[in-house]
Image 1 (cartoon, rainbow, N blue to C red):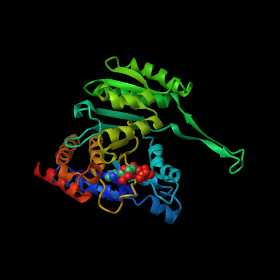
Image 2: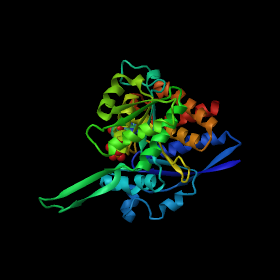
Image 3: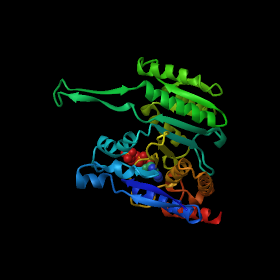
Image 4: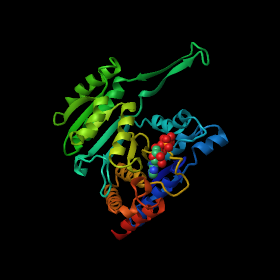
Amino acid sequence: MKTYNIACIPGDGIGQEVIPAGQTVLAALAAKSTEFRFDFHSFDWGGDYYRRHGVMMPADGLDALRPMDAILFGSAGDPDIPDHITLWGLRLKICQGFDQYANVRPTRILPGIDAPLKRCTPAQLDWVIVRENSEGEYAGVGGRAHQGHPIEVATDVSMMTRVGVQRIMRYAFKLAQSRPRKLLTVVTKSNAQRHAMVMWDEIAKEISAEFPDVHWDKELVDACTARMVNRPASLDTVVATNLHADILSDLAAALAGSLGIAPTGNIDPERRYPSMFEPIHGSAFDIMGQGLANPIGTFWSCVMLLEHIGLTAPAKQLMQAIEAVTADPQLHTRDLGGPAGTAQVTEAVCQQLHNK
Ligand code: ATP
């Protein structure tokens, strides 16, 4: 029997509710198998850890994660700690430390979910957004001088490298090629940003030559938001910069029904390091501790985790169990207009797995 080591980092807010729920469904899946099992390793990093130690995670934290097969992450965010500290001190430290340069965000309207686009059937909204996850607007390049004085200056420089753009484009073209429609939209803003984004466009064109069977087009990020709403079926795989994709994928999640459903994987395609899977929502302090958090985004992230570590059939089983549960409106959490809580949805998914 093969053992997979999974690091669990619940982090803050509802992360502490949805990650244990994710462990419960993964354990239920493994309980049925004679071929694999999971060893979960929990790390208490996040806001409370910061209050005790002055850092979001220990200096040698990456060393503890390195031998893991994958990481399941909840959320980092705390009402009493500035957002840039929680983000840079934990999630980005792991993403950038492990060079998880491809952030993959699938969006679909799951069965039973009432999505806000009235003229769109579930079949017309099936997207994967690929977010450049290692540089661009999140490169961390910039600074502040003359702090507090009238002449204060602050800069954030978006930095793009040829290698960084090439590798994310190649990843996105390859992903588009693996999907039935073989369709890729490259999101840009090269009309206004005439250096890095122009190089981004040029490299997209260069890489496209390696994938002659992929149809691709270019779209300005502002126009892309309108296209997502007005012509959702015209999109399939989408690649965008770190910031553009961050914004587009929140829109995508909302269009598919709720932020609580959407999953993501921070992937090191070269598999030098463990990849990290997480729901796209944040800590949602407004509902924490009440058992109201929708765990579906975490469960779908677990599906991505299973696919990544090669457990394809169990991944399919879990996705089917999730879809059977979302199909029943009585099993929807409050964000979807339903009466169920985190525990009830978790139990229902486990029950589905058990019945298979
Ligand atoms: P952060 O600063 O950590 O990103 P946030 O509270 O600003 O957190 P989200 O956590 O993404 O942002 O939450 C935005 C809104 O969506 C909140 O009102 C929250 O209650 C709701 N929400 C987010 N995730 C879920 C979920 N899994 N289940 C139910 N509601 C959710």
